Length: 430
Image 1 (cartoon, rainbow, N blue to C red):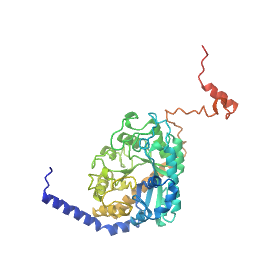
Image 2 (cartoon, rainbow, N blue to C red):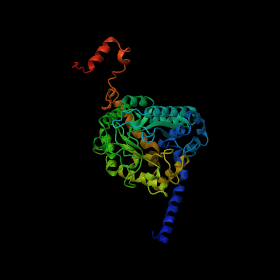
Image 3 (tube, one colour):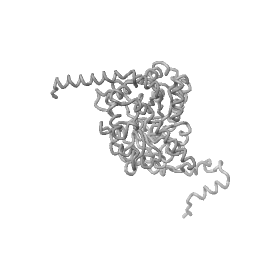
Image 4 (cartoon, rainbow, N blue to C red):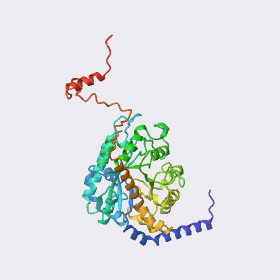
């Protein structure tokens, strides 16, 4: 049995009450600030709720303008003064949906199809609610939407298990407006190593980091102007991607591992690589609201989120932190941040700790938009670089020697047939 010091408990309760009271005193200032500078949340999983609840997902879209299950709908986003959101293109890792890509990741799964359908949901969600939502990809488009009184709607993609092992698929998603790509979700992929769902995974790539194709992926993301997102990845993957990337990197929904030792959080030796000093790379860490990444539960609240933001800022600067709820992608919520109506509480909390309005404009979205602009500048510089021709080395379907139409090869010109025939190794009969 644990002995409780009654006076210590009373003192702690009084302290917590005072902190909460102090933060509430800053709510009006927080709301005023949010009405002049957009809060950009880099990770909201609303599209998966739409898909999960409805056999015909597009039929659910009108309901977003009223009460909708989960953490997010338009009325609650408006109440919470949300300025912009990255809607997440995501489908579960193969173990969740009983699919097995095999040890070489070559057995087809439904991930690519599902990801395309998620993009379709997001596009139609924005079109259906054009009075409230406005598509954006660049920082200037975020401001355009915000000044028009709408919620800037950007698209992020979570997990390279959705790419079908293909850089060609990545390029198509780039054309569809993907603004960041998380290099893994809770499973390894042909590209990169994941830290798993909270328990370790067996190593799959050398050094438990990037594959050779993953290295090409990082270069291609730089060329396309898609942000390299390192949430969910192993520290080795993080370090290799930071070293390889010509553009700044991001963590779209993570915390600080030193504050709470969860594998999904960013360790100090990785944070040490972010900055503007020698050997460092610019970047931003967007702090998550999910209690298992923050501290002991029950009891996790707004102050825990602020603690992670402050800790990370102490390591890499107040100009490199931001906000990422993970709403609609988590089964627990922190007290004071229960849904999308509660964003002002975290802003008020930081203001109560002495963060200046200018620093808070950075936390709200200015820091992230600076990174977006730098990623775009790198893409512009690389615009004459040819697309990578790299393929997953363990693929067996290229060249496509069976695409001629069976034994008769009816779909190929004669000279193509001859060339394909010569590709096969022939043996004289014994």
